[in-house]
Image (cartoon, rainbow, N blue to C red; front, side, top):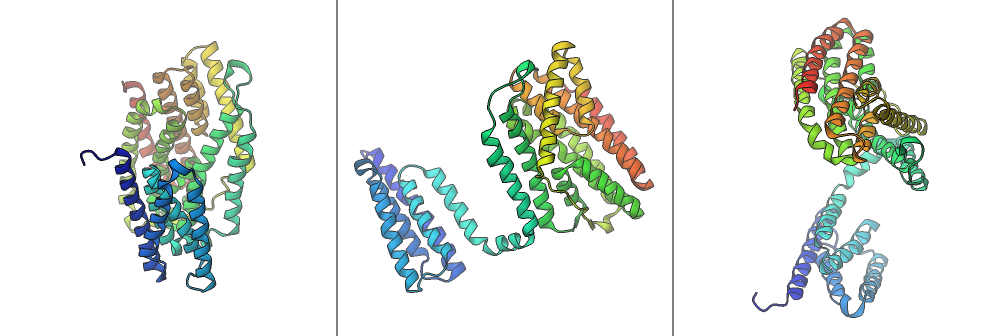
Length: 414
């Protein structure tokens, strides 16, 4: 509107956002809980927070604090009279009040995002309770260990470089441990939530998140015990091997985002090849698309985290030393050897060196890609040796095609 103060129009928009947040949260509470504190009450609470925020520039933050106190007194009276039951609605009211204040203060996007998240969180009461019940005490122990790794150990580590070549930073090394353990934990929780039986495609996806190498060994042993599961095991292994490329891209996005552009083309191309091979295996066993998940180990064990940290540091030094003493070509030898059993450590090491301008993009992505091919070669050999004759046939045939395609991409990709 012409002549309207921009600050005034911003406040009006903020109040509108506040009312919208209060309305949607209140609608969820009234519909889900059938309680008196519903649409109108939550909209008014959000407006109350917004009005309190209007006075921030003149009076400071005390009106918001005073409003919280008043709101608390009102809600406590409701609790005493049993009009408002349950702590969740009480806490939601305080949150909506603060979101209303944040919207008027100009934090529109955070207020909208958090308001939507609060609504979803409130609405998912039953699924969340079922999720907690399914996890069990042992799984909470795993989550607690991840908290120890991420929030207790990480902050106390020094954030500076040590040793030769200036590549070892304890804080950075452990931060990458947190990243890998976190990815593995996501896969482990998905495995626990899905249950012991799932479709083979989903089994491969979850297996790739946890560990494609461990998944290969597990399903190879299963195919030997149940001879008719060879094609199913091949499908799971191929899908898990495809997930490796998604893991690599996620890891690079964290440590060396500029490498993602160089890596995404060949990674996507080989992923398509692996998925086509997976589809061929799927057609072989369409009537047997449900199978058991093998047991999974705790992905947040301190010993595993320390082993990964040592492996990462060793590869970091090996790559830096090879490049310094021999030349860029020596990096490929390190990549091939380390990739046989672990792609993550090599990926993060190369990404770290690339971010420090110690290795160029072309050599970096090709070394990482070579490590994934080396890892695929190891999985083909392990599945062929440990699995049933049918699995051996599938892995040697499909593996040869995938390795040939990957080798062509490695040498011919511009």
